[in-house]
Amino acid sequence: MRLQVKPAYGKDYKSKKAVMEAWNNNKDFIILTVFSPHCGRYINKQDADDAIPSIEVRYQGLTKLVMLERGKHY
Image 1 (cartoon, rainbow, N blue to C red):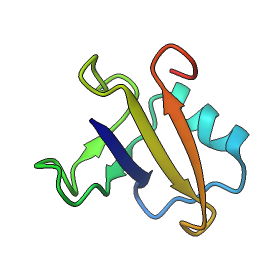
Image 2 (image 1 turned 90 degrees about the horizontal axis):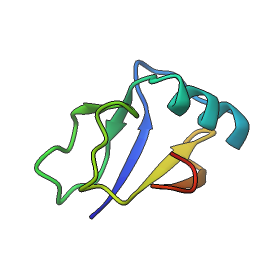
Image 3 (image 1 turned 180 degrees about the horizontal axis):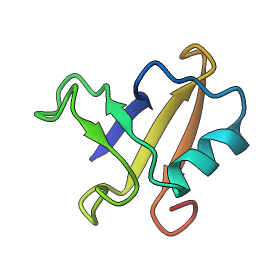
C-alpha cells in the first residue's frame, strides 16, 4: 500500500531537504489517500510501519512530490 500525505497543522515545506528533515524528526503529516481507511488521520515516521512500503509527500503548496521508500529514505 502506498500512502499520500501532506504536512500537518498548516505547515508547508519549500524543498525536498526540508521534507526529509521533517519526516526524520517525526513531524506530523496528514494522510490524503482517499481510499485508505486512515484518510485525514495524522502519521509520522514513528507511526509508519512495515505494512507501508512507500509514502508520497506533497509539498510546496501541494505542487511537488517526494517519494519516501522504506529502506531508501526512511
